[in-house]
Image 1 (tube, rainbow, N blue to C red):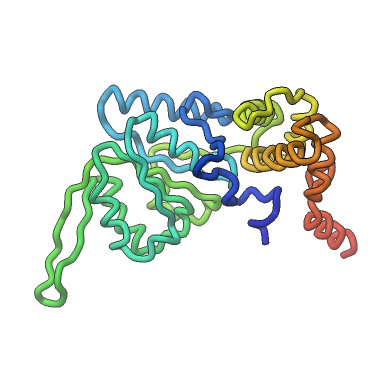
Image 2: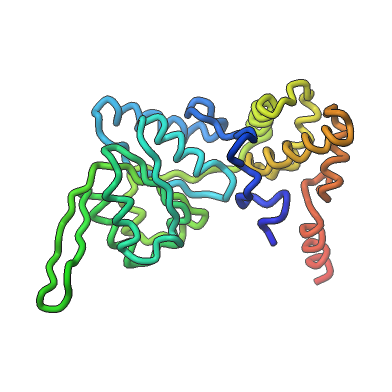
Length: 277
């Protein structure tokens, strides 16, 4: 399965573990590496909202997995001094699933909906007035005794994340004030991320050329780069007394089945099959 592949961009439990294991996510927006245009947009929007003491505009982040959409939601909430509430499209099966979250949010809190393209139509229509007017309507009783009650919400910011922006309806997309497509990372940005992560993992003396071997195999994705770095750290600790150089990295990645092009066995089998067609 894709979730078991070391080079899969899909999130795995090891990517951001809790407890005593070091967390590699940045804790402030200025620590976030890459996506400079998006960072500038968010910084301006956050500062303007804080000066007015208003919620920030709703934000839609779209692009391949592993590029930092969830991390950015955490950083926006931190920058706003607000609480982050997290849910996902598949978890919201009916309109009432959102009521509890929306009604307990405080002023300027951030609601993050991952895989927002998978929202059912009934839930999507239910959140339109919440996004526009900060209110929700729900029906009490049924039949001739039915009545609609309007509940006023605290002003909040919604951040939606999706890997398939084309599946979002036009009305939902139009309600986001900021919409941005995240790009794959260049080698320089990946090296900066790896140097920071190496420091947090206690690998302070890894040279640039060795780090570049990991960056070259990371498919432009920070999540993959950090995952490979963890595997290299464990391999070096057990087999080489903690020493990390190009040779050790080559051995570690070879053990994971990753070649010089960043391809694993499934990739090579797929390409071999294509070549025979």
